[in-house]
Amino acid sequence: MQKPDKKTKYLKALKAAFPHTIPIFAGFWFLGLTYGIYMNVSGFSFWYPCLMSLTIFAGSVEFVAVNLLLGAFDPLQAFVMTLMINARHLFYGISMLDKYKGTGLKKFYLIFGMCDESFSINYTADIPEDVDKGWFMFFVTLLNHFYWFSGATLGGLFGSLIHFNTEGLDFVMTAMFVVIFMEQWLKDKKHTSAVLGLALSALCLIIFGADDFIIPAMVAILGVLTFARGWLEKGEKEE
Image 1: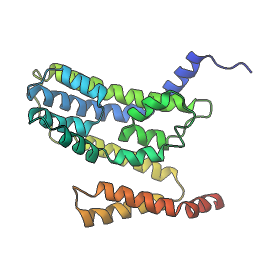
Image 2 (image 1 turned 135 degrees about the vertical axis):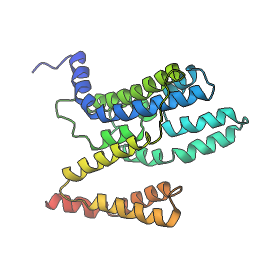
Image 3 (image 1 turned 60 degrees about the horizontal axis):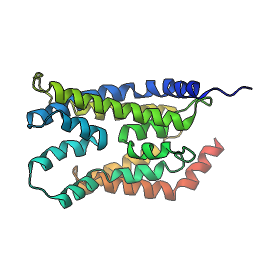
Image 4 (image 1 turned 180 degrees about the vertical axis):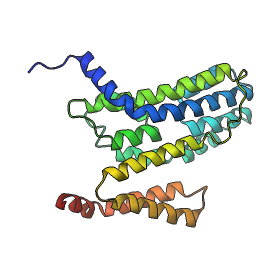
């Protein structure tokens, strides 16, 4: 059997990846535009949201960076703030170790561009057998990166011309994660992992409060699921 040429392989992976990113497109464009407008009204040229969205690609940090740029120069504060905000990516990275094996040079971009949304898709998506998994994950990451970059750049360009109430737009991403969770719930026959995740998150929320529960919750989930891995895999094989 003749192997498909590289162009066909790339297009097949792109076509398989694109539908998964459509919900992210809607959320990223709204939030990206909001970020670009925020930068504009804060006195920054459109080059700032353009370059920051391209090179930083961390939405929460980019919003926080506005105040850091306007305040006194403090690189240590910026480093600690960025580390705390994006500490959850340490756990994402551990979860993706096996999936990124064999991806070659694409691994460097996959690591750089791994945001919450790309992680959710690449970790849970059912990739067709005739689609290259490495290129599928690459295009998911690239498309999501482009959505954020284009939204932020347009917001920076036209921010002075657009006037609307952006309150509540941040809930778009929350709603999207609820949809992803529900799809995963419906896909799995057993919901042990999901229930454990919800229970541990709720417990950490009660103990640590809304502002500080995310990292403890991720540590608890990682620890419990690692400890119970053998039992969970055994239950799946028996079914």
